[in-house]
Image 1: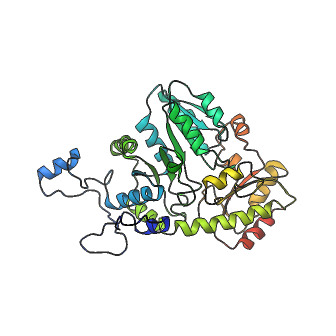
Image 2 (image 1 turned 90 degrees about the horizontal axis):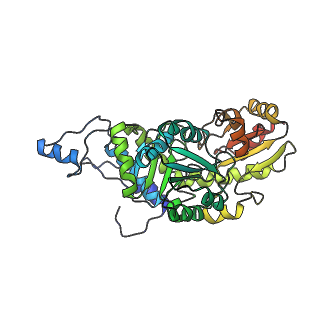
Length: 390
């Protein structure tokens, strides 16, 4: 690609970052090798010190992984990216690169259960403390800042209630206090939301989800400025929670259809959410594309679509929720999301099952809550399958 144009997302998702080898391949190459050969000792030494660019060892330098990183950075409008073995390893690498004992994380109360576990249990063992505040109240973030607060961590939309946080407003609070603003963009992907343009410093991805889009591989990434990515890369180079070349190649191919898939996910999810609101067995539906969603207007301003996640409360608590989950024959009973196949899960006992009842209650996660990752099957078939449960 040349730099003559300001390319659109769909073009970047297909073309950005590719450098053809001497063979002139049309599709992106897959480099399955553990290490790379230097021409001489001086070149090897220069590459290890960083004085000369080049590939060394696939734990931290691989052409296929670099292609994925460069393409994702282009989609997010960022300078750089570092790829990891999973979304959770991306969050861990971020924390290891930027935090030390005595630092404090301020995070949204509505988040993926494993992220809450990482902050509350594992990082706490090494002297990093965490506090959780409502994602929808910027004033609460301002009030909860401590002198040692180093990192703001925000999911928007949140998992699983799709709460929408004002990225620009909370970023302003973070920067006023000298903290790094991090946004987990898993639910939207850069096809629907670009947090860096709204003031965020770093963006987290579980590439396992929409970036792949077909449930094939695990992967993660952190995206941002070169200066903020560098310490994360250095941790990755040393500790090795690395994205494999094969997984990177699969993710590159997933990015090619990201824009098309996200538009289709949004269309199906909105239709499903509207239908669910008419069902007598449903207590409440959570979807940013619905006018009934508390942050509907904010979602319209900072997202180009409502996303593919729909959550809803069924009447009758856990018994009714499990009955619904057990009744489906088309939908996949799995906690993964972002797939072309529609998935269904009961967050209270799966994604947030390890969290205490008190924390669940504070986050609004009830025993009657169901989360649907709406796939690309025909919407009428998705509706019919869910209707078996009531």
